[in-house]
Length: 379
Ligand SMILES: Cc1cc2nc3c(=O)[nH]c(=O)nc-3n(C[C@H](O)[C@H](O)[C@H](O)COP(=O)(O)OP(=O)(O)OC[C@H]3O[C@@H](n4cnc5c(N)ncnc54)[C@H](O)[C@@H]3O)c2cc1C
Image (cartoon, rainbow, N blue to C red; front, side):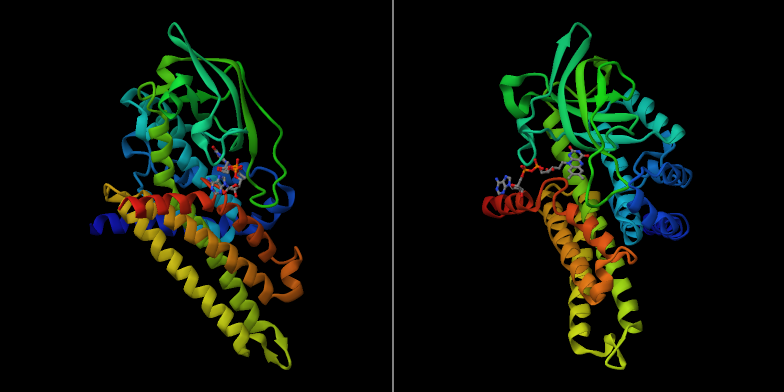
């Protein structure tokens, strides 16, 4: 047990150093230009962070969900979009971990760890958002191949990934049970991408449509058996939601730290505004909520890592609560800066914009509440 703790601590320290030395100087610029930060990809790759969850035998860091949460939280304190880059990388590899056989793991994981290949998780479609089982993208069997046809939308790492975990119908009559999972490599004929979305937040992240037009892939690219795709997708989201929560905690903590520093320095009525009880109470509430969110996130991560049978409720709760806290805390942090919070010279408006999408990604919070309620009433 102590060994795991030591390894997690080392991974966390790597993330702290990377956040301060490499991400901090670039955070505002990345948000301003909206350009995908290939320099950060290279830096994260060098630190092994792009292969965090992959087994050591394939060149990975053998990290668990708790380590992923620690890394994502530290990076998110500085830049939401840079933490989303790492989070997306982890989510893109999870379907291979969950459904891949040993030769697929050898092939893809080795490629990721040796070449720092980026991955993406392609489930969402124009008519299948919250109800992700309603996808239309088809994978039609043709001898030893599949022909993919359809359109995914809002895919993070859309046009920049090297490998896509894709969910498509092999048996349209069976609904969710007719969904299968595949890996599609960038460059496969018939795979193309839409325009980069102009986002209000997480602006360093590329989000595009991923389009399949008679895109032929061999059956060796299928993960698991036909019909197991939905289970793989749902289990992936169950694993990744605590990390999405950790990202929200990081954004909230970054905003809180900044607001405290500012409140100590800003003088009004001949005193630092930190001396006013109204500000102190706001900060106390922000800190309490952030700490509560962190506790829930790491409890969910611990349950997932321990492979407890029932983790879906806690996993949904952690993402739901932490993202609502991030939105509240960043909004209050903007308030503490007054007019300065509302201008781009200060990082808090960026943090508030970045926080917003944590309430939407991986299933909006209304759907997380639905998941939690479903478990409570079942119990
Ligand atoms: C920046 C960004 C990056 C993304 N990255 C990825 C990615 O990498 N891979 C991927 O697969 N997807 C990705 N997504 C998609 C994301 O997961 C979806 O946007 C999300 O699941 C919601 O789907 P939707 O946008 O279609 O909203 P809708 O499903 O249309 O929902 C609209 C609203 O209705 C509410 N609603 C819907 N159904 C119910 C209900 N039954 N009860 C109560 N309220 C309901 C929702 O909560 C929401 O508030 C990304 C989205 C964004 C914005």
